[in-house]
Image (cartoon, rainbow, N blue to C red; front, top):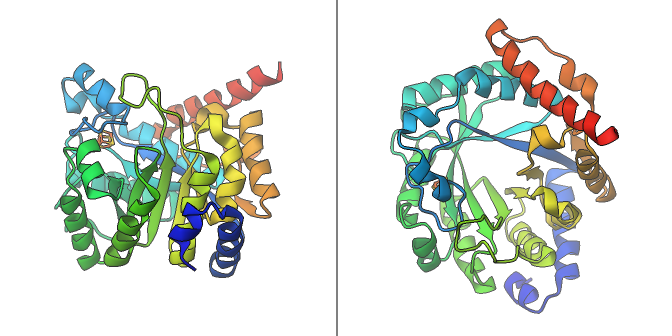
Length: 335
Ligand code: SF4
């Protein structure tokens, strides 16, 4: 099947049908909830055209000050374990934390959740130090067309990301990339994307849709159409039956979830967990998964799960803070 042709002709249902069959036979019917845990509120690049961080960089003078308290990071991991969410990756942190510190945090998270973590910490060659606390390395390529990528992400050249992922391969780590849709790419750019997935033998791909942040060049740009987004995911699924696909959906676009699952998504991400947990929005995510004929691993609503678990004394105040955030939200919404 020529998926690019199919997409151009907007034969989306045909793509869905095939992608859904492939997904069920290759991956089964479980859908995961994924949480990116941020290490810092700092990015050393800070100049990607679509990114919220690019609007914040002038406000943060010292990267060390943007570090999150490590206990807050670990408390988030504990919450994820309790409610059955995966940690999508540890994000940010490069130049805020040293490699040794990031390794230590990853190890502590592995001790909590029992699983190694993915990293998405920028372009780095310092991968040798990592060991079995790390599952894989994510390259935030964002868009696969090299010319567009250069324009949108001037400080993270695609070739350097590719080199990092090649090194990750040599060291035995899994590899992933992130792609944002709706930033000016064309359907033909799928050729570039498919080549990247092929050449790098990627284990997973994370798709996001543009979130038009105020203060960026995209603030008045609409988010990509739901069937375009799902169509790209379906085309990718058909071309790469085994790859894990995670798709991001913002709270204002929850209706994307059903089509994205039918298109081949294995996991869902980009939710403001503490704002949404236990609310009708969290329930909506669960319903979207159910109506796609899938089973959700983890919960977006079960307070009992949130409350159950042991933790190190120093993490307890942070865990309590996150639980309070979840409980207050659902309390407010039931008033
Ligand atoms: S997309 Fe990533 S690298 Fe680019 S400015 Fe945002 S946080 Fe930094």
